[in-house]
Image (cartoon, rainbow, N blue to C red):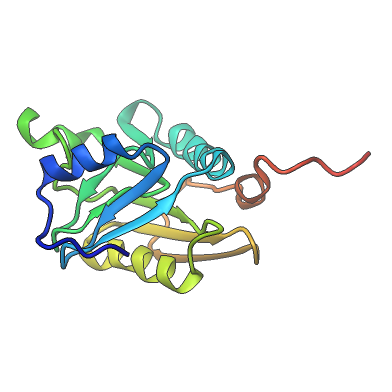
Length: 174
């Protein structure tokens, strides 16, 4: 956690992120910054979490990985590992409001606990999405193989949790 002398605005946060590739940076409601390293393994798991959102959402939505940051109602800037938002809600925002860190909640969020995260912190963060209005949010802990869901799972959405957890790991010997 980094506490800057003053909260960074969106342009400053974009610049800081661009200047620090390999770091996942999110802004907390109080202006502090949650900074953690990225890894290829986490990226593979995030991609596997996006896969079922794309399949389920079809041609009526966007699904995104953690490069897609957005602003929550409490001013936190988050970058969920995987998220889904309907075209209807996305295009209700004018073009200017879809830039930088749009102030919109995804309909579905998936957060994956990385090696540098604590389950408790990720759980709190995931719950906050639903408290702010996200329809369904899931936190997955690959170390314990635990999944916890908040909100109401949309009809037809199926997550292959084993595929997400095991993504990028060596296959078992035959």
